[in-house]
Amino acid sequence: MATVPKFNDPRWTLRYPELGTGPLPVEPYISREYFERERERIFRKVWLNIGRVEQLANPGDYFVKALAVCKTSILVVRGKDGAIRAFHNMCSHRGNQLVWNDQGTCPAFTCKFHGWTYALDGSLKHITDEDNFFGVDKNALGMSPVAVATWEGFIFINVDPAPEQTLAEYLGADLQASIRGYPFADLSTHGISWYTDVHANWKVAHDAFAEIYHIPTLHRRIIGNVYASKSNPFANALEFKLYNRHGRVSLSANPERQPTPVEALAGKFGSAVLQQVNTDLAAMPPGVNPTGTPHWSFDGLALFPNCLIYVSNGTYLTHIFWPLAEDRCRWEIRSYAPPPPTLAGKFAQEYGKCSFRDTLLEDGSTLERTQSMLMSGVKKEIFLQDQELLLRHRHKVAEQYMRA
Amino acid sequence: MGNLITNGQLPPAFRALEPYLEWSLPTERQRSAKRQASTMVEITGFYEAMLPRLEEILALLAQYSPVAVPADVQRLSNLALTLAEIAPAVENFGQPSVVDGYDVSRLIALHE
Image 1 (cartoon, rainbow over the protein chains, first blue to last red):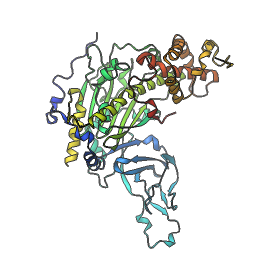
Image 2 (cartoon, each protein chain N blue to C red; image 1 turned 180 degrees about the vertical axis):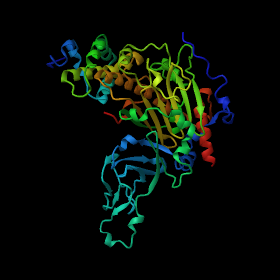
Image 3 (tube, each protein chain N blue to C red; image 1 turned 45 degrees about the vertical axis):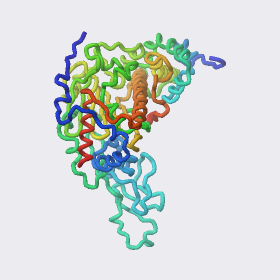
Image 4 (spheres, rainbow over the protein chains, first blue to last red; image 1 turned 90 degrees about the vertical axis):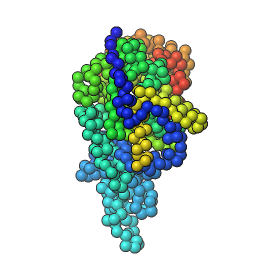
């Protein structure tokens, strides 16, 4: 039997004494008033991951992101000069939503209402029947810009008119260094994605994917033995690392896992989603798989407030949770891997996709059942163990923003 | 098979699987709907017919790029993709849907 050392001695949580070890309050998960303060103090203040540069391959390519939590719609476009810009998706005339479709390519944006037209750089180029206006200054009536920046090909926006930090400062040098060299650009050309509107607070959903403690129980039928093993029966993490407002975790793989019959054959032609089998870890950049174990599955990055990125060998995935109300969120799932070279590789990816999706369906049920019972107000606190450190940290960071 | 004339629909070595052609479906949505609409007897019957042939099937499929595929090979590929869809029902859940699962139709796929 392979030996996996006990990694959490001392407990990870105790290494961050400022986080404490007590229970967390239920109120942030159920309170409308708390939700409204989150909207103002967190989501209108921080950098939010809303897409990938591959969505804007060429000048004129654009996409629209509905940002209900900030009560706006964001238009992101690559200009003729190659720069990526973001704007509130709104006409300066009487406020109509400027672009109505989700994505596309165009030389300019024309409002469907009265035909005002904007260049890709946001400037107002044309006012229909301009002579009948009374001294409007076209140069001052461009689209309202939104701060935008990219990191590792992820596009972030910040709706604060004057963000307190750059994206690089917000992410922090240590976190960026920890993942530098991971082939996001190579992997991001081919992927799958789903979304669903869940009757759960965005943090209930986020928390479910920021801890692995639940996997041997909730997912016992399908991936219970992917991370857990005889020597690590509760799938304890290999390492946690907390940054200023973000965190990361590294997870082990079960070296003795016996695949199911179909999975075993699929595995000869590619690996399932985040379930790596006998792959060459030497190609990983130095910050990934930080403990250097050969029995590694993936590293998870928790980017405050609402984005999780799981990187594995030759595949990565993201979960992003968009608040809709105190008891509703939109959960977006994306998984990326290179296009399969053959139909056998396509079968392997399909097996991985289906087993991954079925695992997500197991998660989905807990989210709504948790929310509905939290809304009862019966219990005022929830309790976290050591392996739920990223939840405790997320709560602490949120409280700092809420008090700021 | 009913009245369908299926002879020659699959590559020659796999014609014995032609009674299962109704499982050869081109999209994830259709394959998932087929799984959810089938009984465990039907699903297991398809699984048990396919599994002993899967290694040979994949050896053939490994010879084809996913673009420009002959029609009979495409049907075989789609048949295999449905096996990928129903495998968790047989190997993990023992029922067509995920045990205690979220409604799969609420998960909106943006791919395919």
